[in-house]
Length: 298
Length: 273
Image (tube, rainbow over all chains, first blue to last red; front, top):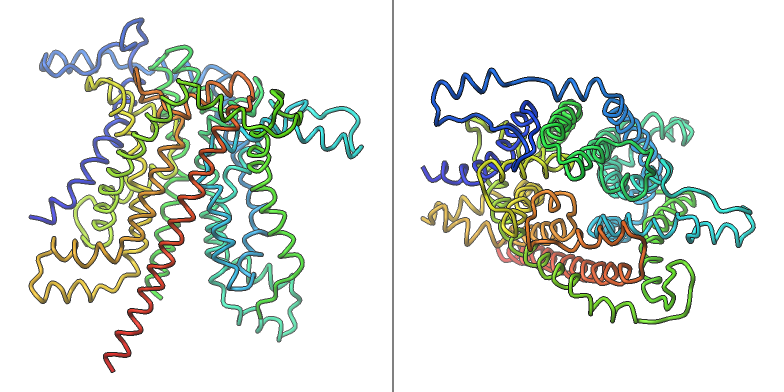
């Protein structure tokens, strides 16, 4: 009895405030846009009984989805979000791996301190960290000043408001999410394995690719999912650092909702985005559960 | 064979330079006399003074702190319950869905969470404002809180709880007097995490807010869109300072309590022999 009470409190909360809203989004995505408050045609009206239910089903249409799939703007926004998120994930992995590797091999006494230094930026406001890059990357910004004073470039580079700035922003903001799981799996690797390989005459680079990297795979996967999934729907970074031609679906959804006030279409955009992300989210959760079981089994 | 090579040291140094230089520059330029953010005009604290006179900014800061306080408290209560359910309740119908519900908000793009919560509030006719932002923040923060507390519950010696129950303590009493004190450091860090997540959130708050509940990130965002000003650097520096101090205190407290626990454990073992 008491057990059910314990389970039901967090369960019901998440049910009502996380799961139910998705069904509402789905329903509104099937309704028509209207100039009213709220700006969509009414949903299922149960007070009218059977007639209401029949009405509801006869009004369902996939018009908003047809709009999304026939308009190149939306299709391109999904495509370029996936592309930008994928490339940024690879860059974040390439940048994060040597850092995590260095941390795992650092003297034991330093490690808590190093870990702390990785976590600290993660606690600092996301918005502020993205904002910091505007001052660095803009035309008359600090980076251009610095490079011109060194004489490396003669004219300022145009970086802010391009896709390059979006890549920098994503890699910078999500780097801690990549380093932490990588470090966790690298740190667990038994050094005796590498010693044995060295004793048997394996050169260090070969040991790295045949032992260290495969054993760090759970961390590589976890970190990549943690960067990729939220990056696909990222809004703040493309909005502040990207240009007007940077297409990302999070930004499209935001504009559709706040500027065009088209709730049904933005709901349809959200539903499709969710469908796109379901596969990586499920894969990620499975990866995490396997990890936990492997650890529990030891 | 833990060889720490020059390559390792260099990658750590470059990595931390990358992580910290932007923040450092932001802090330094908040003390810039010049209005032009990128031209150094000498040291000055005038932007802090002007920040303190900006009514809108201060009101927003106060709203944000209140939202963060209430939502993180709610999130920690719900998140701790959720963690206990996940680790201790065993199998129950709907468990897979439950762990999925805890897990999904961690990676869900904020635009989706924000939009769906707003549509819920509109559908049930809930007036938007302070409380809708609190509910929204509590909902996604509780999942982070659950993960933090769950990790502690996993490496926890269950026999202590069993001993308390054998001695006749009720489950509630066991939880309050045995379990809670042991997991307390993780509950505190979960609260701090929930607090900063709420402090930080722009997207979900923008969707779920209503009249009179404009939060600080929303204010900062609307000013940033107009351009970089030293005043934003000043308020950012204050926020960074608060968070840094909070995290340092929390990690110090955690370290001390874990040291004390180890000492107690050793003492208990020595006494038992």
